[in-house]
Image (cartoon, rainbow, N blue to C red; front, side):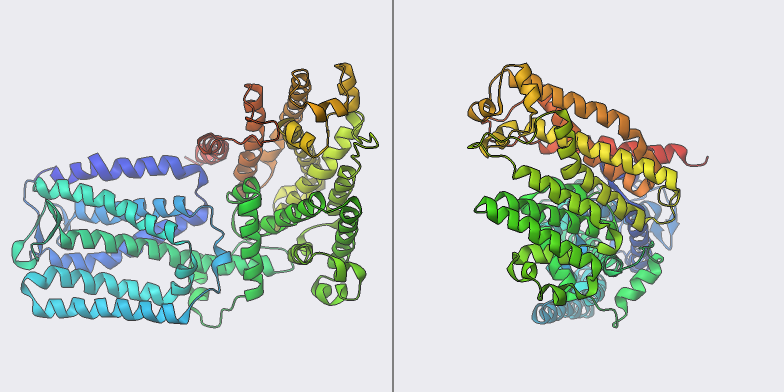
Length: 596
């Protein structure tokens, strides 16, 4: 009886698991825990028969001084715990690396040739494994690994090969390589110290490096591939469910139990709308390139709600870009009018949108990308008024004219009105989606609570817009726009034209801080209302808002971009810390509130 194997867990595997848990906890959803625990159960059940054959046959052995002596089907309990901790750690690494991915966007992308080639390759490995077992001797351990692991890989490949091949290869490879390399290091130390022994008669005596047998290296590589592929199978099933939910026109309810989700995925009659998946993938690609804040912000939301938010954000991004990048003032006005007409048509006749717009001037003349993003909007879960209000904000943008000396933000009231148009309206749309995705929550059913939530969201939208304007004084001046109220500028002896000429004038800093202070006041007044929304969205909303407000904090610290027209961005580390603290505030409060 000894503690050597136990100490391997205490010194290496458990600390890694604890570190990964602490880093991941605020971002893990209920579905993440279900996936992980289900996969751990499958891994233990699937490994015990195989391992209980190897140990009695002395393929590998454990010195009595290295283990406690308690066994399950001849397997030391330390080894059974390894099945758990390896699956747990690898699953957390996979989820961390793939958190940003919108899995439904990777459906319907299978290549029959690649799928068949993969099936053939894995089948050859399975047959090679059985041939090695039949040959025996030094090929025994290698054969047992290949025949066992690759048989499960073949099953996983049959279930989700097309989905796996569509996923970004870097995330998949690193999800396998990182835990594999870690376990190679741990196994090397354990073998060198004699904590367990791979018996010579059943191994090839080929080492990857000193102390690490080739079979052991292959074992950890294949088992981590099994864990990652198991997570992919689960994500494939969940993506199918979320895709169907997002395509529904009514109220979105929570999905069926996990077992039903998997059965639906296996069922050959389950189909996905290729045009829907294609449009989603296009929207995701657009956001990931042109609006990192929106894209990463959506990553903290769950399921079909995230898909709806992506479509909403994509519309906002495309409409804004088309107006700002229009070749002339008249063309920008035409884009806004086309957008207004198309939105009305979409809300009135959503199922016949494409057919109806072909009969209108807007449908024939509007940019194709604008038509596409409007067609993708989940109008059954949105209202038209806020989106039309957003267009009014774009019209205000077109009111800037340096040649005529026209600057529409004359005073604080104009500033408040503009912020409402371009930011509060979007916040209202987000809440409309939340209410439809969680229809039984009090914030959706109680009229008074709903009104309060909407008002607070609109105030929060203004706060974030004030931060944006404080950050982008130089960038806005570069396109001849000044959102600082003219009355404010007069107080410090400046005019809008002065800001355009010299946006780095030290006197402007006073107004920058004034914007930030107003944003902070609105934030403080409305932040508490988040707690009355569904718990599933509290963390993501807090993280999104906190990230924007952190930009204000950075500005208050005196940090500025190198050039006035450049955009100030938070470092990735600071953004993670802010999101972690915001998400953690909700996650850890749930733990504290759990019945004891």
